[in-house]
Length: 517
Image (cartoon, rainbow, N blue to C red):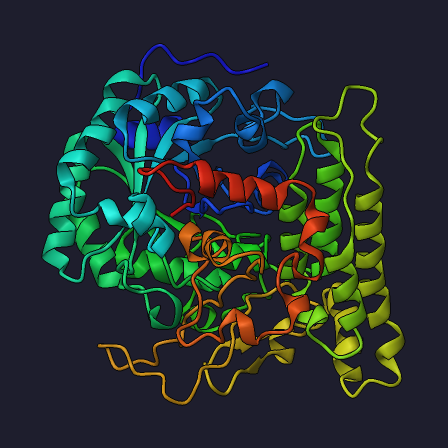
């Protein structure tokens, strides 16, 4: 049963505290990746607020095709539900913010009205930096049209029963960024998320997010501010709060590779200098095996009436399991994931939930094989001591810190390969330093796996979401083994997932594209 719409619409910090529960650990909107099943998984491991994938406002309001059901399935009764059937009594899809992309205030309002009873706020995408956003005229390519942005935010502010929020990228100038943020507040935004990169910072030019910009925004406005950028490990969360003063920290790429990124973090915990320096923090919260997280995610997918996009499932498995799938001896399993063919009903009818899940069975078997293959390596693998330590660590007697090594080029921690962890690609030798004298990729996350189907689709599933924050100088997708690319081994196998993305691109209209900040 959907929760009733509150009679009084709370605003600013009152909304942040009383409706959202003062969240500090936030999961970003991610194209085809922050779907219901993944939202539920991250909540189980400490996420306090989660965003939907970005939704094309124009298409969502159109009842002539399946886009609405595929992107926010209201009819199934689970998206935005305050409680969900589960072995975990805490399973919920609240608090939830639904993100839309648009440049048309009227179309945006029509779509937002459809979801306002099923979420706690509606967010506007003002940050996509990709060429597809330039052509569709949305995201960060609206940031010079302040009157239009003001009108979109203000229209929702005046006409919705829930607050409106906005997520944006910074300008090169701190002063202009601050004025921009103040305009968003005047328009009616009740929370703003500041991604500390400019729209030019993408692909090989990504570089570091500027915490100085975010801190200046936080000082200038009177509404809550979430900080986005440079968060790879749990300890980076507190570091981000310390340096920006933000009310919450939003993670995208870090959570994709480790859905338990926020596990064990406390809003009242203040780490010591030594703990801040140590990224893994396993003396407090031992990292989890990636196979455990992958199996739990698949279990959630199976348990829902809401249909999970097969392309989303495949993408999550590639990312979560990557530490093992990238090793010799596991390439065949990587290929198997890419080749799984999917047949699934449009919606699972009550009492028939087990039908059409053969593809999930196949994925589960592959994940179990990943986990099982680690065991026989104990006597023969050159990393036998690490495998032994894995077993001992699970008993809580050996710290993961003792097994961590430093990546020579980035200076980042590399955890044992059975552990869920961020993925970053080595930098080429000609990567320039950033203005602060640091290596441009030192605290960068890697680009997400890209689909091969077409260039626009790659952009859509990559930075367009700001779900991904690629390492500066990251190796272009065309140089990578095809098995590493989500769905690449058989892109037709993901049912209508790829077609759905294509449809959004083709039908977005001259003014609307698809993506998420």
